[in-house]
Length: 530
Image (cartoon, rainbow, N blue to C red; front, side):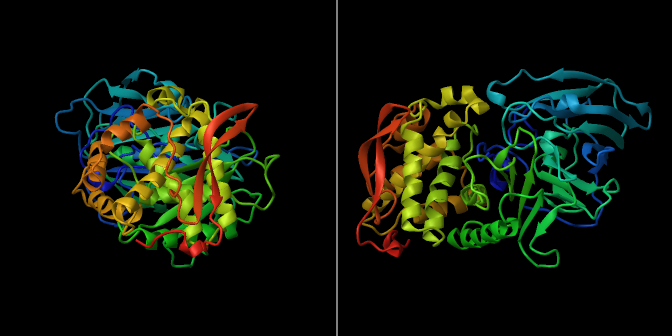
């Protein structure tokens, strides 16, 4: 899901655009929050923004809201004269967020501050748009802000788990699902803290940025761009364990949570070794919540973290079977990142590359068999070639947005096939000396360091410089215009071969591909080492 821009990309934009979008549904790639640097320092920094979150519990023992107390010091961004606040109206299909901000009170040394209110134009497809509060008089800093954010009610459209929902005596969601923050304060340092006195049981207050009180670099709206969880949550590993990987969950899941998180921690370590552009890889946090009522959410990545939000065991699910592919996919977003540009227009890269590695790396790491690997590739082919949007341009897919998951995931699937085919093309072009992994490494390092603004054009030029073809024309034809694509037969390694075939779905026939094992080929020989 949605991923934040890396540090080099974030530095180009101080002011948040009114339609900015969180990355990581495994679907978007446009957050601007600097989540790779949480600084637990005690020194006072001015100007500043401080926020304390106080969950409240009703008579039934269920969290019904989060009360927020905040203070802004310093001043406004250069050139601004009116103090402004912002909150999402809709955020990635979570509806009416700003409407659930109640009891808003803003004061300074002169007393209460009144505001005029204006909403952005609605954005189709469930994508974010915001409400803006503009002070009717000049303010004197410090400014105090308080409000009560009600939980997201049950029901409503499907979408990622950004809304705050109660579960298992606690509360979880994302900052963008309930927070109102200064829009144009000069502060570049925020502090986020908790008041957990409403909970009777020993409880934790944790965010993407860390546990307890944390520093969040950057403008105040960056505090919106992390997951939050509070209440009697379980924790992996043990609290006294020194680890860069942490997991927290609310609810009793239909699988062994600790075993699932042990697997995810192993994959974190494997990815840290396999990729070399994050050195060292940052601390990582997984959040999981079990909900009794829809919308359930699914898996969504933000920087340095992801949330798995789900409901009770489904009729087609097997008790005890954890969604390992979801854990792998969301975790991988930490390393694959994104291109600069519109998050939906470029999710062929962020989601396609992530999906490609989701299918290949667990096999390379020895966590799945050849049979499981082939089954996964055939499922990928089936979804892509028999989908009604397989040849849709991205402009049409964007209009549907979160209204149809099958349509929304087409860029994931054809992006994965594109990167598999690129691996084959690179191996042929280099005389089997190197493939995609070797090619990616310097580009991702340059993106991380800020040496390269990795746009679609920059990516295509890098491929063209190696292979000699017009990659930009191919990328636009495939990912922008929606050309149906058939990768090379050896795209997924030497131990698997792709064959053109006819696939059936609901009585219809579609031209597609199937993948079969190569007889006598050992799994460890499937991929070249590069």
